[in-house]
Image (cartoon, rainbow, N blue to C red; front, top):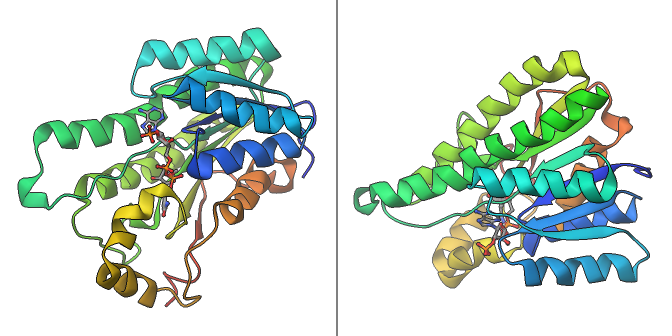
Length: 252
Ligand code: NAP
């Protein structure tokens, strides 16, 4: 996948899948904005990219804060001149029984996982419409609903990811006239710090893996390959799709 000349923003890119997406897009030739709450950690990812002769910029951005999101896009344009690709990846997954869940916890998850995607998509799309081209990739989850995966103790997370899929389809329709493609990726269990709470309880981990025909969790790089495909012209006729990458979980 050749992304030379493209500019990509990846949120939540200090670690986990966001980091591998940033590295993969940079390796494919894109200039990459590495955004997350910790600037210091973003700078480490930028150093990794630069070590591999790539170009990148670290930006501190809490995706739930409109001013910080707008500043992130502004910095991207100041440094690289435009925005071609947005990977809405930043997210949190708090494990808590529904009956104990507070309104504040619900709001925090929805503010980051759903409102954050809206804020970033809108700020990036305002740049993309100027050039009449762009790609937005929203990271959802198999916990998005309607696919037979109901996971207890993360009701707010599931609600946010269902919202991401709905938003992806609506945005794809609204932004198609501007030649902006919008797709979502729904990963199953992927080896990142986000699944540490699952791994801490061997019984839960075993029960979850039991549902996955490939009997292993995915690697972040395996999801990055899909990000690369959706970011590139190889997927030029795809918009409004949600692509599942789950080791066969939904098929099993
Ligand atoms: P991760 O390692 O926890 O990475 C998420 C990143 O997002 C972290 O660096 C986190 O920073 C950052 N972040 C959290 N809140 C933020 C905010 N308000 N603004 C900016 N950045 C923020 O998790 P991951 O597994 O790579 O998750 C990436 C995406 O994949 C998420 O959307 C997640 O829901 C989705 N996903 C993951 C899995 C999985 O099994 N791992 C499966 C399906 C979908 P802090 O660490 O400081 O909070």
